[in-house]
Image (cartoon, rainbow over all chains, first blue to last red; front, side, top):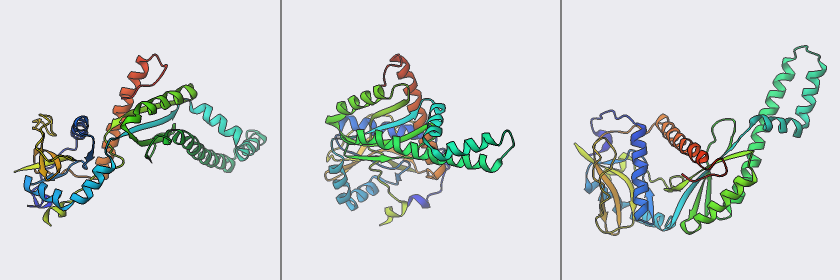
Length: 215
Length: 87
């Protein structure tokens, strides 16, 4: 039987189910030193199908199990606490923005849509560059004790880093200390959201496609 | 019709049990299906299609983010704003 051929009952992909999936993996991680997360929503029709899958992809799974052994994922988000300060810095740091703002002032209240649009675009670009620069600074510090780092899309204007680090379990405390140092160093400017230890979701995500069950 | 929902893969050659707590309202038992020295952690589940659409993945990310941010807010408060604490 193939998953995709089965009469489908629509299943609500609820927050509860998604969290349950992750929670199970986190529980298993407490007992096993190497765990490969499987993509949410993977269902085989029988235990035999699961065994077949394990046999067919055993080489790949063994390599991955070795690769993530004794490793954890730590998630770090960095968010500017006060965007007004950031925009003020951008205006000071950027010659073109200063010039355009000067032009606007010289126009003495006369509306100048062209210049306004230009400023908007310049500020947008400058913000993106500033995010990149500050992100690289923070990530570089943390990367020193990580095997790998994955940058994920940020959300919102104020977030400039959304990163996952693959770290040896034995160095978690060291990473904690680095995070404390960063927090102290950037107090008043950056809020850090630090999560973990997590399953290595951003480094391994085993996908099993319905058509595979047939082979 | 009952299927086997797969959570993760571990390096274990013998049957393991992780108690109840599987996906779905029933809190099914979590067990393993082994093949030589690797195993899949599974629980019984109806054969349903979890539509893995982009929207669902976004909902997933959002749920995770909210959880992190909620717990982060409380831990920062508890530390009197003087530090951060991992979730």
